[in-house]
Length: 206
Ligand code: DC
Image 1 (cartoon, rainbow, N blue to C red):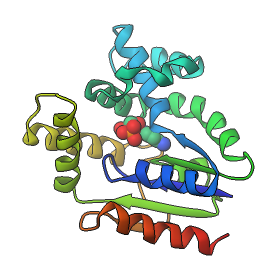
Image 2: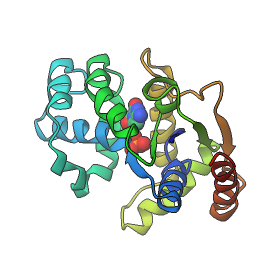
Image 3: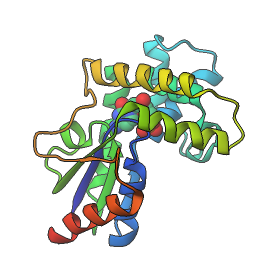
Image 4: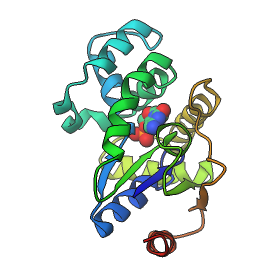
């Protein structure tokens, strides 16, 4: 059983994907963390986002331990991840790992941007979890403030919109719902309502 959960940042796809995996006993992969690991390596090496060969090199030799690096969730790492994610050689280097992960028994849930379209086009179930940009910005703003970061709502919205535009406009594997994906708009739903809806669809497939 392979379940794809795609969508833009801060729409709630991580919450959805983790909940499915833990309730069903499936493996879970946050594929954004792979792009973030490349972004973090680029920043630490002082490379610019258009250094294609450096990014491809880091993607081909990812250090698995860096998945636990606290800096992975930083906004500058997110912005760099979105830049390196547009580089075809970076995506190609990460593709086989994601596909191998997806084939694990008894099932796997992968969250990202292109799981239902490119990584696992034959996934058994595909969700596209989205929400309006202003709602996603407010959630991200509250999360950042809760962690003690001094940010403004306007800046968080601007960052989200810039990242959305870059992720949706890129030539390779842009953020787009697969034609057979179930679209869940979380703008006006709370976490419980979203999970109830998703889990009833997952259970109907089992
Ligand atoms: O989901 P996230 O915010 O952790 O993702 C970080 C960046 O990685 C995001 O801006 C786009 C990119 N990404 C991607 O291109 N494809 C994926 N499957 C997952 C993430």
